[in-house]
Image (cartoon, rainbow, N blue to C red; front, side):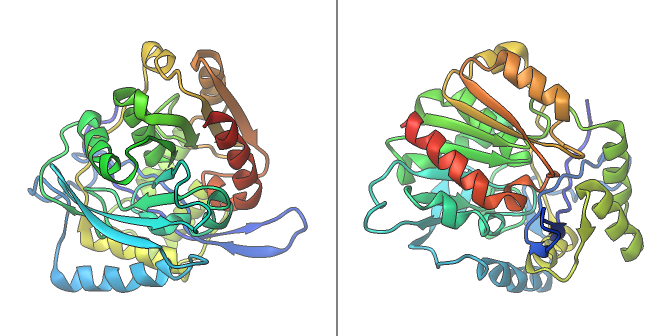
Length: 338
C-alpha cells in the first residue's frame, strides 16, 4: 500500500492517569510512515547506518541516558553475530528466573531496547527477559547486509534466539515490533511458545487516514520544532515532551541515522489463521495506529487461539501507559501458555 522506506519518530509523552495525577511516561512508540519518494528518501546505502561519527556519539550519549531508566542493570550484555549483522542483546534474570522460559521483547521503530524500561519489573517477575536493538534501525546493533523483506527480518531474530533462547520463547512486539513479531511467528512457529502483539502496525489493519496525515506532517524535512512536536502529540494523543531521555534518544536517531528496514504489509487471512500458538493482542482505545476496531475485529475472528483486548484510556503508547496491569495480565497469559 505504501511505497518507499519507513521512517519513525517516537518520543516521550505525558499521560494523566485516572486520578488526574500527571506522570511522565518514557518511550512512546511510534510510527511514522514516510513515502520515501514523496517526502525524503534515505541515503544510497543498502544498510542502516549513522550519517557521521559525531551524530553517532550524540545518539549513544542519549541512548545510555535512556538505558539508565531500567530499574536494574542487565544481567548480560552481548553482541550476537548473524548473517545480517551484529545484534546488541540484553538479558535480565535472577537466580530464580535464570532457567525460566524467556520473554523476548521486540521494539517499535527507533526505540530499541530502552523502550521497555517501564515494563521490565512486571515482565521479569517470573521470567528471564531478553531485549535487543533491531538491525537496520537506530541503536547499538550494526547492520552488515540488506534486509530484503520480512522473512529476512524474521531470520536475524531466529539466529539471535537460536543462541539466546534455544528452547523457544514468549515473543512480544510493539508497533513495528508487533509486525516483526508476527513475521517471526509465521516463519518459525515451533519456536514461539506464545505471541503478544501490542498495538501492532500494518498487521491486522491500517491506521486511520487522519493519523496517517499527521505522521506525514511530523516527518516532513525542515518542519519547525514546535509544529513537529504538535504533530507528534496529535499522533500519540498526549502532550509531547522533548526533554524526556527517550525523546532525546529518538530525536538523535531520527536526525543522525538512516534506517533501512523492510516495509510490512497486512497479514492475509491465511497468514493469520496460521498463527496457531496462544496469542494476546492489545489495542489502544484512542487513536490506535494498529487500526482500532477493525484490527480488534479481524484479529478476534481469524486468530485460532487468541484473546484480543481494547485497553481503555490508552493510545499507541499502550505498553508504557498501562505497564503494571499489562505486566500482570501477560504474566498470567505466559503461565498458561508455557
